[in-house]
Image 1 (cartoon, rainbow, N blue to C red):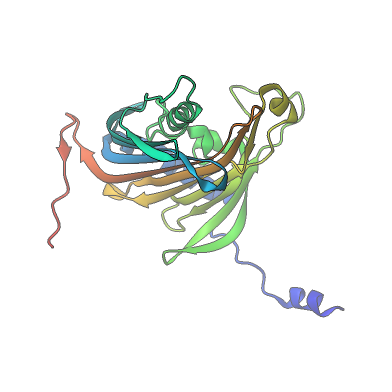
Image 2: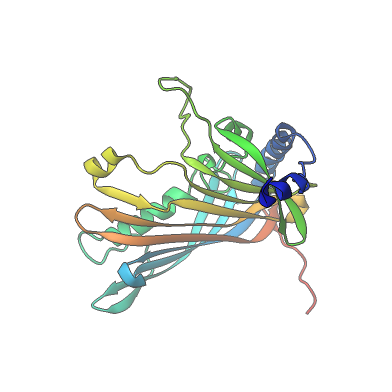
Length: 284
């Protein structure tokens, strides 16, 4: 018997999950449902940075937005507090402070920066602004994916459960309610005691179909997302950082590397009358 095969036979089996995977997913889904309800009482600050880079990494446009976010029962209310923008023209960077600002008649960089921000972090039907169909852990979204246990991963001293996921493969012509297709696959790290997500990383399972590239002249490369959670007031786990990066090319020669990053901070509890209760200051 070859030495490698013998070593594989003698090696200890990988650790099993503490619970059947269906039970893990059920507990995560229940926590996600509870978290969505608790988030209606959380006010926080959000910063979003969108960058568009030309070839060679030269900055074409950068826009930073700062929001105060006040989730409601079924949606997300956002107040735009400030915009810090830069656009390149004539080899120099020029500032602007209006997200609707365009420095020329057809300003694709400006259109893409605004559209990307609104599409990815300003979903009005989500309680944290992030579209629900981007990530797989709520009870309704889990039905669109298959999951498997993929071992453990150490995160900040926690031996997190790692689950890999991919879209459910449906037979051709299979009808389903609503939009049943999901393009994402990836991994999620789960806290082993609280059954809350610590992080999710996704990537597009299938490339953009060739007919889309031909008809619309658009190509995307390396599209994926990463989302990290943190534990905040009252044991609530809340999305803290979120990001994506991809290459965009259009048939008439326009090409950009696009990055978007979001950070949520300064979580505060709001009463039923919407007055804000701040945490007491810490001694310095």
